[in-house]
Length: 459
View 1 (cartoon, rainbow, N blue to C red):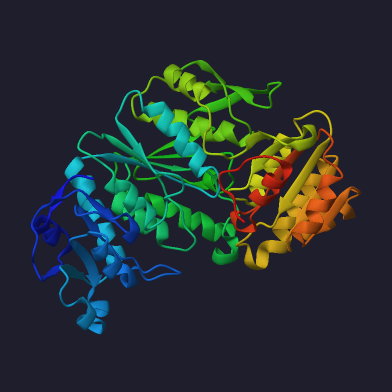
View 2 (cartoon, rainbow, N blue to C red):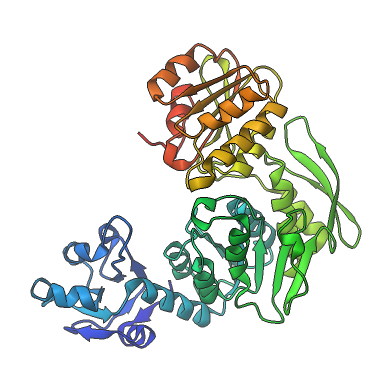
């Protein structure tokens, strides 16, 4: 982070200083009391599980010299906090946002915002790969894409950076609008409108409206990039800002699958440019094409952008291929799940020769739409069958039942992990096995049991 002295920080946050005792240059903001040092501001955040204010004393014991504190907490705990150097603010989360806006203004870094129901992280990685040779680029770490994670990403900017590629996630209305207000993206990308969080937002129409909040602060000279294959994005009409549309302004043709399950295609813009992907999944055709469009908008030659996405190798552990026991191969995709990504993963599995097995867990956060969404996966699976299906959890049984109702007869459901392990062990024999489900299902336990090592291990 750029260094911010105490007086400057007070101006940025409009905070009130209690017990002034320091005036040095601080070089970062830390929300974890275990990671502080004398040159860090400690920022306690009120989260879903913990209130970071309860760790203010721990932070000072660990060496921090100053901390933020919400006024309400301070006055309720004034005796315990009375000797500490604190900056009092109304809301620490909103203070994070004020500081991140200041850092963007101070560094002059332009931002590229990426949202969508699925494909945000892969598209972000493609975009970063396309731009990193031309610019000094920063990006979110992992899935630091919410109202806390994105500001923390911005805090890592320095005066040397030119661009920040920012993934923007949401569960509710107005969340992306908050992120867009902070980042003020120069280029905004919407990957697609799917069913993730439909249990909260109620419909794809509402999801569309929530995702389009990314355009709330686009100026006339800014650009929205979309793919018109999505039936919601296709209906976007004329806009005050520039809109690039893959499907009309730029097109994709001659899509072919290679022997390794990856795809090639031609990107058509000012000529025909070949792309040869080195990542699995047909969905990455769209993700990579969106990244090419971002590159073109940012001054990268189209031929160079196509070559760069062709060179890209994914390292974020999504659709990771691992070697398992008993001669099996594992397609591990345990990070997240939606109806759309389940279907894409089934396509990947079915590209493999030999015996194929899918082990599918629940897709979470679907609410009242859970049954119909899981049944949609079952319907697709029945039309694109693998040799054996195992479902694990609760609502994933709807996948099994729907597939069976359409004539698929090699499906088994388990609600007990040990029973699933026992059954799996009898059917490995040199199979290719897809393991996929929402992160909260702990599907990486199954990968571990199969003999693969997965960094997102849950016990």
